[in-house]
Length: 167
Image (cartoon, rainbow, N blue to C red; front, side):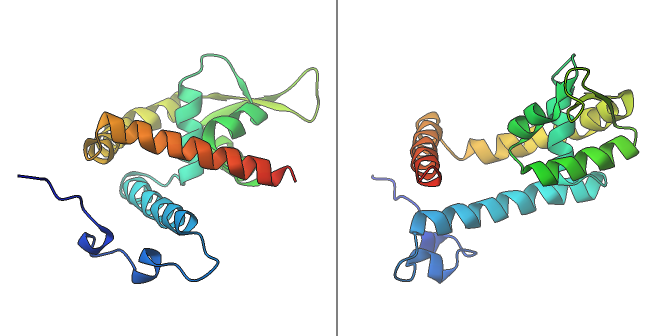
């Protein structure tokens, strides 16, 4: 007996216009955009149920919780994958809420270094089991080969998009 692969028609929530994009539209881009919105909505549901953090704020706390040393803002931006402006606003909110502390760089007065506080660590500790459950649920529907293929396809797309940005 052969196993039938799921199609877009099997997903009730999948809009018809994403199955057959209009002329000139990239199906890959439309699929990625839809997937991003759904991922964001899913994680925001967890955050809204359990705390008042935004997604960038959560990512910053999570990233800083892995570091015993202060982290410069540029590195925070790289680790969390959000734009500089969004990251700056999230850092300000977290610092105002005493979840992180910052200090100015001694070598570059424009740069700041950030470290998570015990309040921030407690927030991460309370959210981490829910985020781990989410990760497990998402990844459980894919085989290791599918995850590797997804990563390979993503790396190829990132490469072409980076090349196009350099033009």
